[in-house]
Image (cartoon, rainbow, N blue to C red; front, side, top):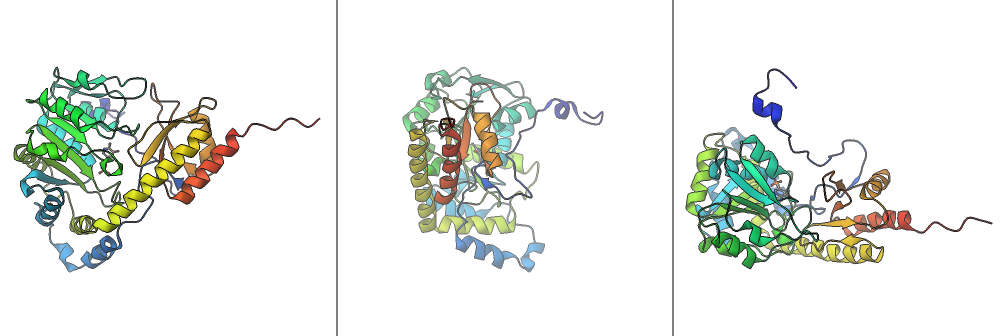
Length: 359
Ligand SMILES: *Cc1c(COP(=O)(O)O)cnc(C)c1O
């Protein structure tokens, strides 16, 4: 605590990002990064972009990337906003669409950044408890709020919400902004992009960090009707007009152009997720039905924290959240088949019934 801090900074409890180890080499299954590299086209385009043009500011409108993304989703450029990672889009959205003193709602178990932004911007929030199976009670999101945010699929559970449920939430909150954070949508969930044409109040957030293997590049997209996008532009141009750099723009463009590689990578991850889920169930694990690039698991006999420590000892990093209701669960990102094989081996050894003591 410093006397120089503003009251907001004194009070805020910042988000705690997953560990990025510096020295020891870990199998990293803790921050939902993609285990596969980005498209080689992305890497070569970025190398080519490292030239004298870096003396110039990037295009603040991200026009080229918007055109490619618009075509990809069958939208217009006016429906797209580009940000420096979707975390930035969340921050801008909270500023653009919610007032200090408003009360927004989101599930009690979800991405913990939502409560951090709410606190930072003095927006009140109410959490809606998910049920015992971590399903989101959709009707509790009908009215009685100043805004809604739902991650679909949800994090850290991986559970996806049906598009009809999103539609109902939009219908029942037509005068409020409903943010659908689709960070993990490419791994099997049903995107709400098609609802953009029918509903003026939906804002969809996408990121290139997960399904396009570009967490290091920092690109996020907001999709929504022109009014909402204009609101985001007003915020951006009041903070930093050049949030997305030249290199990132070029990399993102190539990522969207290489559809074949994208399809290959996401299919691989879905396949591996199914395979490891099945094997973990055979070991007695409770595995939540995930549509994301991670699984959320719990074992009836060994506490999650104990599993966490054992895995770390053996060089595997996973994520444990010390929060009510989920402190006996681990969130495990889907790695390569080899990485998951090793992870499984550590758990299997740990859970092996101890042999009878020698007589
Ligand atoms: C990873 C993640 C983000 C942030 O993605 P970036 O684009 O890397 O900032 C946003 N929302 C959820 C639910 C995430 O898991």
